[in-house]
Length: 358
Image 1: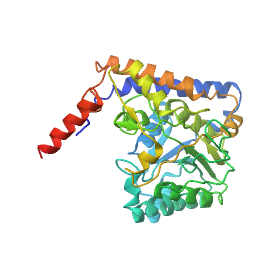
Image 2 (image 1 turned 180 degrees about the horizontal axis):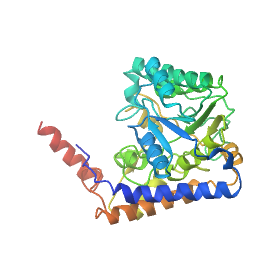
Image 3 (image 1 turned 120 degrees about the horizontal axis):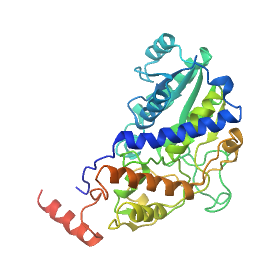
């Protein structure tokens, strides 16, 4: 009742910025001599999750570069189909962006545990195993939502490294992801990238910005986040370097919900409104808990030192500048409101009227 459909900016405008950023990083890496051995014409990429948000972006990015790329049609839970498709395509690189996160959010996973296990655990491990048997490098886009601030890692203090034991199992989704991360360390052909609260330059429903804009109330907690415009090209460079192991795949630093929404008001919609509530109050209306943490990015920055990782506080400004430009070009700046009414009071009134009319 509180949402209106949002027109998205033209794909070409948004993707052009994304692709330019990708080639900028490729040129920087090539100039440093780090990708020459792995950027030959014999590359063949295979992407699992072709109809998803991340998978679709990866396919378009590689296609725009002129690379041979195939979107996998087999589903992770069907091992024989996956094996047959791998043997047919014979990829040099596999990118796995498939999995169940739940709609509209991870609470869905609490009521569909068998399906989540079948895809996120058994299916993912099966793909990694099949690729290992065929000596294919595979990049697995995982999650960093397996940690939560604690006494040793308080807000603004010590950050979580790749070696820290996961301490968050408040949602079944995070629990399964933590299991898979431990198991996939068995294989020597796997690059694990811990994505967190991914952000894009448009108003995609999967964009973290879009998600929190829909809520009347949000918690105000600093978190590590992944800005896809910058980080997805980085992942391709890492795959080309045949890197393996676990990496925190976020921009350096942390940013809070309020900081993001205030930038939304500044760049996109001055009339946008929101309220805060505590984490304890939030937990009362959710089926599953939510992970809040800041991840250490020392390891990933050392892995590809020739390409700068931009701090989240700086990178997020670029996101909103590009988003505003895209929306303006599409004639939809500001976009239609995410919530009913222009204030909490008006929202409550309209919501009550809508409920009474049923």
